Length: 85
Image (cartoon, rainbow, N blue to C red; front, side, top):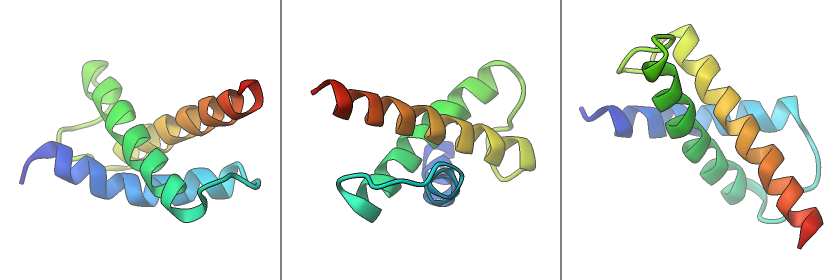
């Protein structure tokens, strides 16, 4: 299976975990959370592989942590953009 598909699947979980870590009312609800999770997972996975923290599969503790970290970064950026716009 292609690594991006695996990272996207991990992103579903990462988005929910990021929302649990950083709760709040966001427009878009669950769909936005899922999309931010997938995007953050792909970002975190790429950075994790680049720096040797995560593996290709993403199905490791460091892989999930980088995915959650990426999702948190995107969630923070999303909230900042909402305040500015």
